[in-house]
Length: 344
Image 1 (tube, helix red, strand yellow):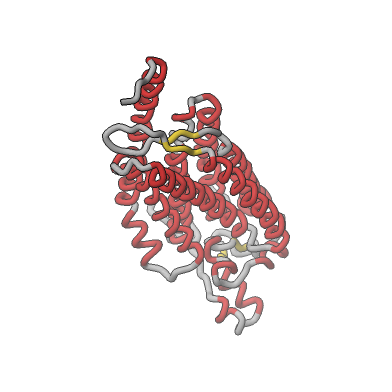
Image 2 (cartoon, rainbow, N blue to C red; image 1 turned 135 degrees about the vertical axis):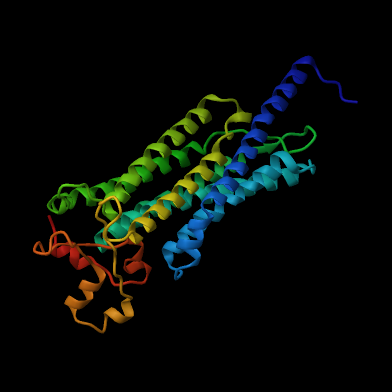
């Protein structure tokens, strides 16, 4: 029998007590995932499974189902009774990789939205591509450092693996994530401001909503929520003990994927809205034509089928782009000429 000093017994008791918080967080994350999935299942059927599968659909599918990988945390902290150190290390490393993929999916969705509202322009693609490559390289390096510092503790309670993080290098990933979210929001707001004059011309007695303003509004709210979560997690990594540093990382990945799926749902719902609603707020309905058919028509006919003609200003000659997730990069005729010929 191993003799333990009172100091060591106190440390073990502290670690076991703090481990309970990981169990509570994993149960909360699993409950949130299931709740979100069920309440939005009808939207998934409508906007994902009842439509032609495109790149935007792939993003929505990933945002809906990648959070279920957080159930592996539930298995690791609550369910498993295999307390072997190799098993616990393999599980926590797999969990860390899935959380990283959730962060990467968030960046991909936000940058894709920003790229789409700029019409898939080449002068936006390069400024997006270079930082993304740097983000991937830097974040993977930080992830490797963090994973190397994870250790399975040699003692346990009734179930679950007890993990200790020897470093907090994952804060680098969180900081990079916050920078890229700010960058994507800036691109979205820049396009909104660039066309503010056109939107003002369409305003009458009642306010109007268009797809770009909806995306900008959603993007602002998403950024505020994400910034609060990310900054709070950075403070947790910097100020808490080793056992509690990773407490909310899994929950942050789940929350951001859920918010991204709601961004996509809201964009698709706004684009599908009829030209007028019962409350009198005018809407715009897109008529989108596949690229294979558009190439066989003249330039004027092609753009008239891709762009939305405003019924409120027939003499203005202004048109608005349709759902950004139906632009050229998702298999439809590209609207770059709109941005070249309708600059503010």
